[in-house]
Image (cartoon, rainbow, N blue to C red; front, side, top):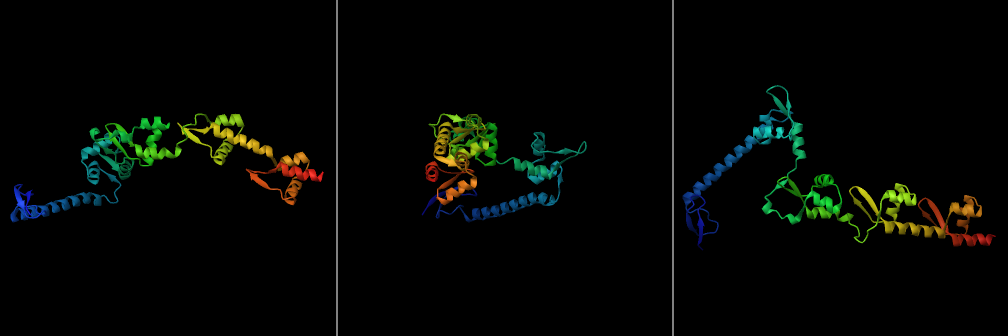
Length: 292
């Protein structure tokens, strides 16, 4: 088997007998091997040089600009740039001496997570939202988008001064808040309070018990007008068919113990509705009619 290849050491073309052959001769192979050994030694030396300032800095809480540069593996000029741009805090203790706290370096690293920067021509913009597009589509504040995406680590890329957020992750996050598009009329909690005289706690309880659709836009909660009115009307119809203990006491001039005694003796079914006990009017009226 003959394969035309280029020697990795001298760069000359040659015919290889195996697909794994990389060099044209035994001499080039030896020279390539020696170069790989030298490169490994250089890498080991560089890694040791990087480790030395870190080992020396163990237990040290304050650094000069030069020490901070060695610790972070950057140039001293870059440290000056970070301080000038207010990305890293430094304290001037004299005319020619400034120090940086270890805690400030760690804080900077913690609050500046990695953001992938890529050329615009390599970027498929259809797979990403801007913060404004998210705010307009899902009716939220643009500042909330910034906070939410950082807390939930939504993938994003930065092109020039603009951030683009993964459309797939944002749509998945808001999927649980989707409501029926046919619903067009909504109550605010204030409107429900005014119409039905309910407290905020009672409203939330009503929504939870009856599974009433809700949505949130710009920090304001809304409840489906159709579903809320239906739940209240069904409650009114249900109340018309039932007595509460208090209603039975007032209608038949009975004590509370007497009402419970009649329910138990005649085995009238009762149910708990919130904090009230209720029972069918037909059954109780029948019992009271017999007693008369």
